[in-house]
Image 1 (spheres, rainbow, N blue to C red):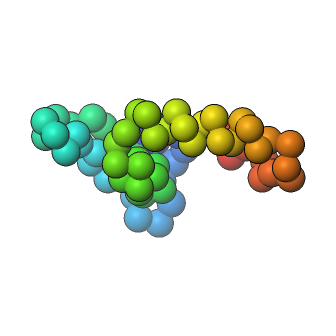
Image 2: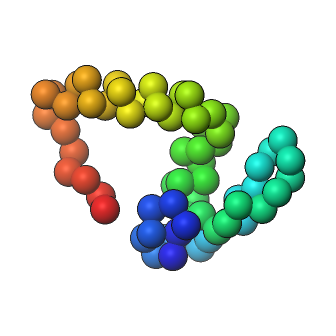
Length: 67
């Protein structure tokens, strides 16, 4: 199971996630979660901004939660 979304991996299996600054291993992630973190450059600030954006636009038609 993915350490972030807790879902089983799809076709590609799990990947070993690590911090690019320290090299420290963080856990096994599905490809989607690993790519998502990478697209946000592992930035907590950017992820918080993404959450605020989604909350702000929640009145628009949205996709159902995947969890």
